[in-house]
Each structure stands twice: as structure tokens, then as C-alpha cells.
Image 1 (tube, rainbow, N blue to C red):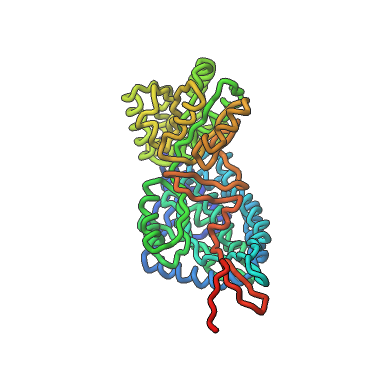
Image 2: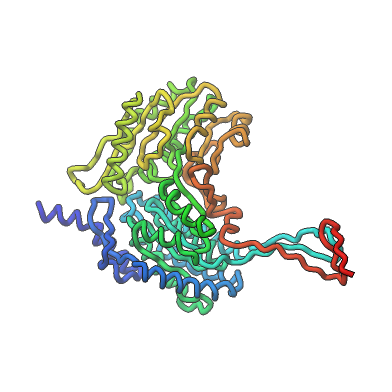
Length: 511
């Protein structure tokens, strides 16, 4: 029996080793930073943390790379990103499975995360021929005004465990086509996926003469490594994804040196269900948005705001469905909810449920699963919690599959509930009333950076700018004009006349 148990515990480690070998990652067994699979809590690899001396040297190498890369024409930069996207396509099955093994999200979501990487590469390739400024009318005769965009230099990226590869790619693909080098500090909980991505990028650079060494660099480590990047004046932009607490730690450090910061922080996302909503459509959106990635997305649905006139039709369906959601090994095709990242996440979920009960909540689900089989892992059933009011626990983000249910009487009341939290990432409304939809989208509606109609708050496409307001940090990544965060703007005025008229009609005669 002991041998059989040991074989189960070691299974993720063997699978990870095989995948890393196929991807060309040679050394993931030595170092002080350990990676554990959420599937069974087993050790799956070790990497070496970067010390202060290592970090300094790597950033210096990145500075040299940026100085060379900025002179490469943007379409040629795009060609390198195209090559990287091709490597991702070839490695999608392996990299997606590695994400599942190290992060715990179901395999469909692991593959979807790699597809996000491919999509942002495609977007960035097109962008490489569209880094355009404006020509501006000048008030002075014989003058032309324009704006030009230039690379920043070195972009630092701090990423979180819940999207261990996609968020880095959002930043890196845009940063590269904009002419920057990238230094990446991945989550200490998912270091192996970072090694795999770095190796795939290095393979894209092979035979590409225009790519300087150290165009992409990985610095493994804990929060102190991220703080070192925040304090380093050579990091022109620090893009940091994680908790609001993390943002509060790094943002003042970057601001003190007048650096740029791009923050993607916490979310406490709501979905409003109006009287006219298509309930079948809403139900599907609610389930995925609330339990996808085991509730560990920044865009996870955490607050369901249902109109009182339809609550008795929708809520019984949710109460019946929630206990039936399949919780288990994320590699198995029938699984909808994989494990939480670790036991600490499970403890946080338990504390939130106890607080909700103390504040008048009625809980369906939320119990521990598979503990006897995997005592070092954390499997929890999703919890549906009907609350009498938007109390303090509802206003906190708990990174776990907990869906709080509230009722509303009017659209204004629903909007007020949506906006009455510190975070402002994602929101949505289900309605077939055009006036309700437009009001929710208007300046008098949701105060979030992502506002949807008849889809859930979770699952953004890369074509739109991603990010939120208030304690979410205000940053924007991915599509639209998010590329401007990775460049600096210069306003140019060219005098092609033989006179020197001054702006605003000022006369300044010197004889």
C-alpha cells in the first residue's frame, strides 16, 4: 500500500520532468526555491533564487539588450514575436499541461492560458507596424507638430501564480515590439512554467541575428526579489500583477524614484441579474465565472446581485447545481473545479465562510474534498452563500470559489451594490432591456474597468485593454492602446520656414 501511495504522490513530478525535458529545460531539480503541485502537494522541482548580485547583473545585461534592441526596426521586432508565437503553438499541449500541473487549473484552462499567449503574440505582430503618433496642426505658419513614441528601456514584470504564463506574455510581447528588454519575476509558487517560457523564447531567438542576449531574463525569488526590481532605477516600467497588498508594497517604492508602474491588483466582481434576463444564459455564465480556476482569477465572480422578482426562480437552480460540480484532479476531462493553490488558500476560504455565517449568511457547499487521498493538497467544493446584506466579508476578496448572493429591488440599487467595494476590476449585467444595459455601461453605471452585458465578468479577450480602477490599480494590459504604457512620448515641432514666430503670438524683439 505504501508503494502505491508513493507512486501517486510522485506522479506529477514524473510528468513535469518529462514535459520539461521535451521543452528543453535541463535543470529544474536544483536550488533553494521549491515548487509543489497543487494536485497532490508533491514536490515537482527546484530552482535557484536570484541573489542581489545576480539581480544586479541580470538587469545590467537587460539594459545592454535594450540599448541594442531599440535600434531594430519595429516590424523586425515583430518577426521575433511571431517566431515566439510559433514556438508556443508547437508546445501548446506540453506548456498547457505544465500550467495545470504547477498551478492546478483544469487542463482546458491551462491550454486556454497558452492560447492567450499565442493570441497576444499575433496582436503584437500586427502592432509592430502600427506604433504611430499624431501629426498636429500648428498655430505658427511654416511649422509642423507631431508626436513620436520611443522605447522605455527595461520593463520589469512581476506575475502571480493564478495566470503563471499568460500575464507575462501580455506584457512581454508588447514590450518587445515596443523596443524594450524584459526582466521577469514570476510567482515563487510557479517557477517551472517560467523556465519553460524562457526556454521557448530562447529557441525563438536562435538564428535570429537581430535579437541581443538578455532580451528576456527570469529572476526567481520571493517578495524581496520583486522589491529589488521596484527599487532599481534601471527598471523604467514595473508591471506588477497580484494582490492589492502587493501593490501597496511596490507602488510607493517605484513612485519614490519617479519610475512608471502598471498595476493589476485585486478584484471583487459582480454580476447583476435583472428581471428581463435570459436565466439559462445567466446560469452558464455564473457557473464558469464563479468556479473557473477554483475561484482564483482576479476576474472571478464573487458577488451575484439578483433582482428579488426572479430570485426564487434562479437560486433553487444554483442550490441544486453547486454540490454537483465535479471537484477533482484537473487533468481529468470531467473535472470542473481543481485544487486551490495550497493549504493556506483553503484556510483563508474556511475563515471567510465562518465570517459569512457569523454575518448572517447561509452556506451551500464549501466543504473539503479528497483530503484522505491527498492530505497535502487542498480541494474544496465551491460555496454558494446567500447574504442578507453586503457585509464586511462580502467586501473582501477571498481567492477561492465562494459566490455571495445578494438581492436588489431597483437597477440603481444594483449599481450601488456593484460600486460599493474598494476594488473596480470586472462587472456584468444580464438583461434584455436596452435601457438597463446602456445605463449599466454609462458613466452613471458600473465603475469598473471591464463592464459586460450578457456575458460574465471573467474571461477577457486580448483585443481589449485589461485592467480596473480603485484598488485594482488603474493599469491596462493587453489590447487596444495598452502598448503606450511601454513607450515614452515625445512632442516634436519642426520649423520649415525662414521666420521664428512664437506661440501664443508673443513678441520678443531683441533688435
